[in-house]
Image 1 (tube, rainbow, N blue to C red):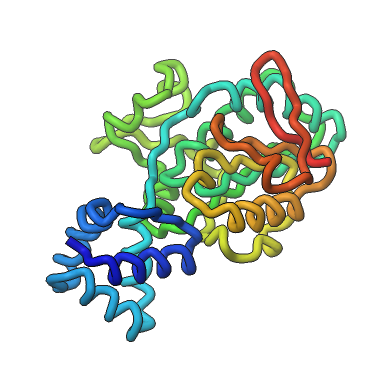
Image 2 (image 1 turned 120 degrees about the horizontal axis):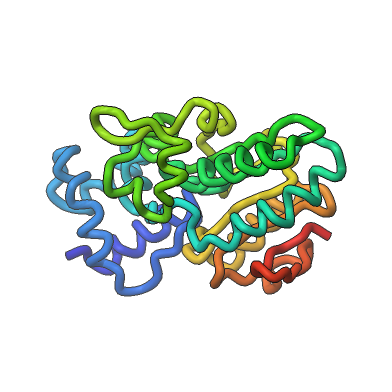
Length: 270
């Protein structure tokens, strides 16, 4: 078990490098998630790992630690309603402005969210051919491991069924020897890039729609303010932000207003 001093130091490391807040009495969680990493790098105790993090600029070690501690829970069309609002409300409204639509999927994990968005965009464009360029999606994550999985677009039998209908699986995936691969016409819509939400977003450019869902529950109040303000700077007035069902934004920024439609609620850049 990690002693109190080492636990506090590790918690500070996570908070400073990627904004994650561990909270109190999570020593067992840290021990269980780092056990494989300790074995891979030849450390016997967490304090040895901490010493290496202090004394070394080893980015591989740092990335592996962050990967181990990051929750990458995801599924296709998670919660359904944001994707229904995207198809039925947001895309038609923004298309009326006759300009290319850019979408950002922040903390995209292994790709299910941005590819779900791409499928919705493809279905919508097939029914209502856009007057401007096709919808494009930027997907970012801190973890190089999950970004590699996302870029490959290959999913096994278990992950492919979580939230994905049979019809969409048949339409947008190819069956291959070791699973199901997203078809090129969907894959090419998404560009993946490593990004720490603690860093600047300026180089990403402007977006019309941002998905940042079920991520900020792990961050401190001050970090949430910084992230929401950063997202707002990358959006023009009238753009839409989707957050998780349990995530409130009003306490951290006044840059967005709540918009309620029959399918659910979303946030619009003031």
